[in-house]
Image (cartoon, rainbow, N blue to C red; front, top):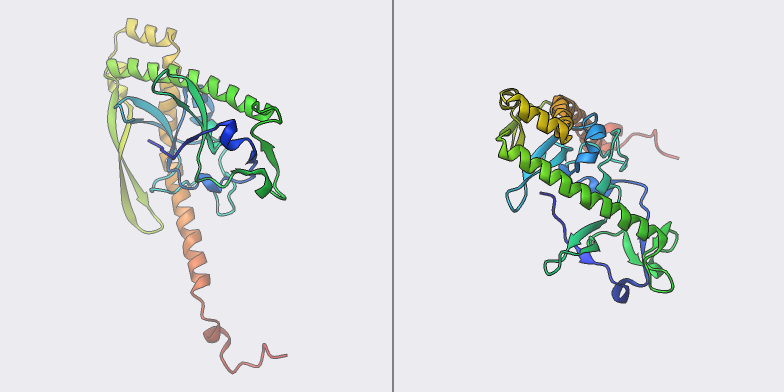
Length: 270
């Protein structure tokens, strides 16, 4: 599961802090996969594989598969631009996250303190930013909108987990070791830890159980996932393209200018 350090936002500590509105996704380059909620499936399934993983409590949850190697998101190019059609919702609001308190299960707005996108206002010269708190110590309008978004996301996350629990109880998940090719380097890659819907088990369900899944809206959830698994090949092609770009860049770096031009060449003398 994607994890990161989180620090709770408070007016006493972050009253003068701002959120830098980044125009690139360099920060997302390290995410090989990223959590999704069910409301995203319809768009996400057309852009990248939607698979499942186990969290720390062994509960299955959906993720967007964004790469085939650790710390390598194929959807972020060297300039930090996102090259896909859909961006996972919570990546768009990085470095913020919602956490729940252990004592009373309340939602707390947090941020990744390792990010360079949240800082004191006095250090944000020349940057486009939004204040976290207003002059009265209340969340700014932008942050209130962000909190509302996370409230909706948290609700949908609970619905999504409930759907995954139903599918688990029906024994519809199967482990899926991805076997792909790094064609640029000519080596196979095996990625473990992912799950998918067992299509044979799904087809064997009694009609009343299929109808129940349909009535709960889970059948659409399933089909979006199954459609998306065909995009594994797209990731292989993206990895091959990335490998060839890196090899070409390395060749340029390895050029010895003295050998290329010759130490005694008069061509570059003025």
